[in-house]
Amino acid sequence: MSRDALAGLRVLVSAGPTFEDIDPVRFIGNRSSGKTGFAIAAAAARRGAETVLVAGPVALETPAGVDRRDVRSAAQMHAAVLAALPADIYIGAAAVADFTPATVAEGKIKKRPGSEGLVLELVRTADILADVASHALRPRLVVGFAAETGDLDANAREKLQRKRIDMIAANRVGIAGSGFEADDNTLHVFSADDRQVLGPAPKTELADALLDLVAAQLR
Ligand code: PMT
Image (cartoon, rainbow, N blue to C red):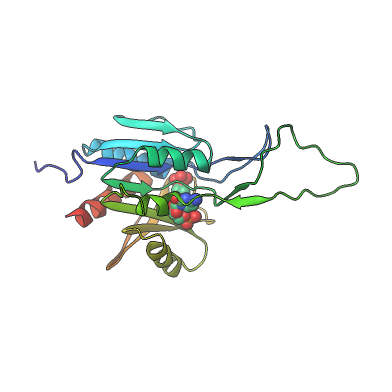
């Protein structure tokens, strides 16, 4: 049997949501279950890669042979991913918050008598994927995901270029049986000169199919 192209390489994967705290009891989160990133990390480890998984808050078991680093917020994920460099390959499957509260209230925010609303000030988070792609220790291959509800092709290609990454796996979110939480998905994978559709298939199978494309791009 021939040796897998990923064997012996260091693969860094991010997975799951981030939770951005508003006060000690509330946060802003999203629907990511972590299934996609965990499946990719499991497949990479099975293929002989030294695999580091930076995981947001999810209820999933650590795949065999994977070095897991748990985080909660986008800022913590940013720090953990950059601290795990150098790597040969980075795959950003996490659904990272784009915005976080400007301040975290020390005590639980109370309803004010006579006030029917609450205005939260949000600030942008750092873009982990773009920062990995422009890092002095840039991996040989940087792979992003794109969660889309609109023009999937145009938005994915725009992210591929703007974030200066090598490959992007776009998926539809906001529909049943695809994207967040579901066991199955369809991935539209773009690189500078290629476009492939993977699935619909279980996320466990898509993980291996995506790693096949990654391995082919490395050659
Ligand atoms: O976890 P599951 O339930 O299996 O769901 C899988 C998934 C839907 C979360 C996954 O398939 C997916 O689409 N992940 C990316 C979600 C996302 O944040 O997409 P985006 O289009 O907003 O971001 C584009 C890319 O930039 C992503 O690789 C993201 O990780 C990255 N990003 C975004 C913001 C930020 N501050 N830092 C980042 O690195």
